[in-house]
Image (cartoon, rainbow, N blue to C red; front, side):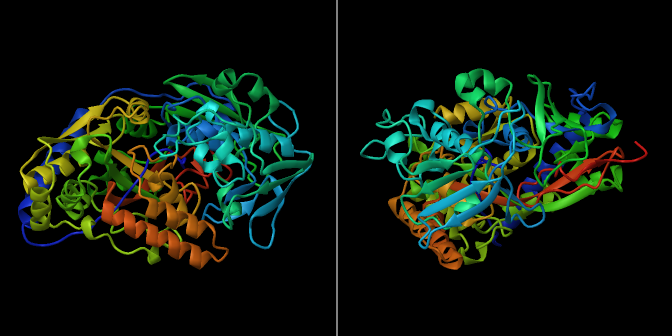
Length: 568
């Protein structure tokens, strides 16, 4: 999801030559790591325990959210999974195609040049506390999310609305980050206007033809009046309007949701509840699925990819789903070591992505040649990335030209399966460039994210992006625009901003995609990050659940379709 579903970046390819020497080294690293993982049997189990809905409820894999559960302040996957179940937006995204479909909205009507939208929501909808979902529920929520005083991580998602610059002004030189903007000169955006209890209008500061596609992202969820009375308390016990209502949050252990029986949307679930078991590593979750203590795991650990072991462990209960997601590495531009473009290009060209995909992931990833996965509409318009190809000699030449750091560090969160590939990436960099590269573990994803958001990273770090909505601009804007909500590395190029705005102003989808693709071609020259591989999800589950559908956009389990098996 994103945040933006809370990570960012991607690309890759391969070349012959010194390729084979590096391949043998990476293969040795991967083989050793795989053996170590299989033998280690790391401990720690979420367990299932009692859960909302009893036997007609299910348990799924999760992790401790980075922040309180507030839609506009959540841009990472652990919190995003939960918020996605708690809230419904104007539109939802089709599980199989990712296409937007009306949900809370009865209609969304644009004017001729897509600068004003009249939104009519369905009458009679309620939040989980019984209060009505109204037009004002959306308008107040969006104004809160955009207001700089609230320092919401996803504030920039509202920047297309007229009046955003008054509620979230930036410094004249554009250097302010999402949490450093000057004080607002207005408290509400002039472009939002409530017409009646079920109708509101949105005036934009530029033509914005993808409005209907964008507003399905969870940042655009409505909020009840109880939120504004005490946002801090709400974040710990959120009140949504979606198919599931909040029950309990035992930090670092579990989050329990129960089915909201008054839910009137199209995605009404049959299960009576879902518990997100919060794990610190995927190996423990995998063993819990094997033991019947966890019903569904979105992604198997690295050890289960070896020779496709997960397909023999779960011969009738596994799925491999290609998604709109990629894995990347981000450079922090606030570190002098990575300000030189030649240095960034050299490190990227020193990575033998194809071998790592083959030896570490056993073919379960796809070396990427672009900054966007192939499943994203319009990706065919994006040119291949010249510096995303394994090219040892070119890498050495670029390294010699750059301001070379004494050592290279790649940070990753060790509560998921990132150890093997980060060490393999560093091994490839060391073998190619002769510089010491170290994969540095951070205990949890939340801790890694906290350091990233605080601009406190001491080296490059793992990142990635999961489509919030199926469009090129969702990968371009949040990650690479100057004030993008997930542009934590601090990259900025006015030409990229211009291409993003140009595409957003188009009313023709093909023309918009072309402009955004040209923006990506600029990014590919600057290399603010390293694209590694496009991802797919290898999921497993117990015989308690059936009718498993994995969302092609997010890679998440479709909770509206999963069922408890009759014999369970």
